[in-house]
Length: 93
Image (cartoon, rainbow, N blue to C red):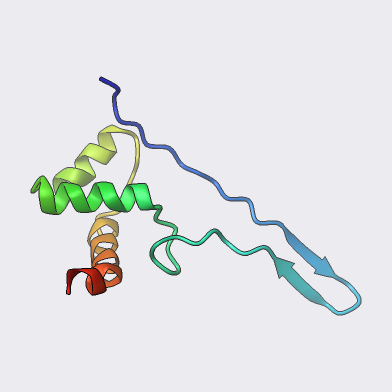
């Protein structure tokens, strides 16, 4: 049995500025299932399966993440579930 681990993946996006035209260009961020969110598919799948299939309340899931060393604000998991459900709405219908 392998214990679950959480890791932070830092994405470095290089910014380049041009003096002649006074513009700044930055590479695009990696796309995920939720537009504008940094939530990765694995985290979303774990949160949704824990909540809806395993019936784990979000506050208990938050406590579990805290024991793993991840400091997750209280509003993050409900927001994550709501946005994921909005993305998955066409599938559920």
